Image 1 (spheres, rainbow, N blue to C red):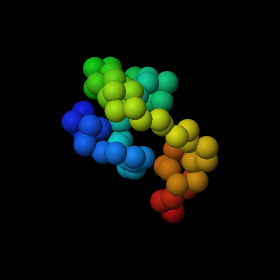
Image 2 (image 1 turned 90 degrees about the horizontal axis):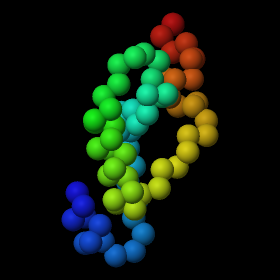
Image 3 (image 1 turned 60 degrees about the vertical axis):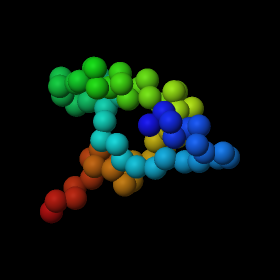
Image 4 (image 1 turned 135 degrees about the vertical axis):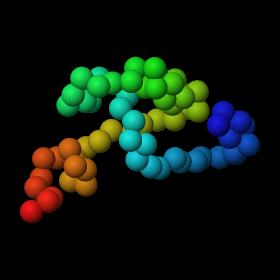
Length: 69
């Protein structure tokens, strides 16, 4: 994936729900894969990516809304 950055000139964006927890504080349980998270956390700056902060959880399951009535 690191080869991608050298082949792109100009601004670019990566979008998606990566379903990966980057820090244990983001979990509701004790299960956390620190090695997997570290690989992902290392990848972000190596690609010069900037994570946009999550401002509103209106479209996530973490907002504690009752979706399953």
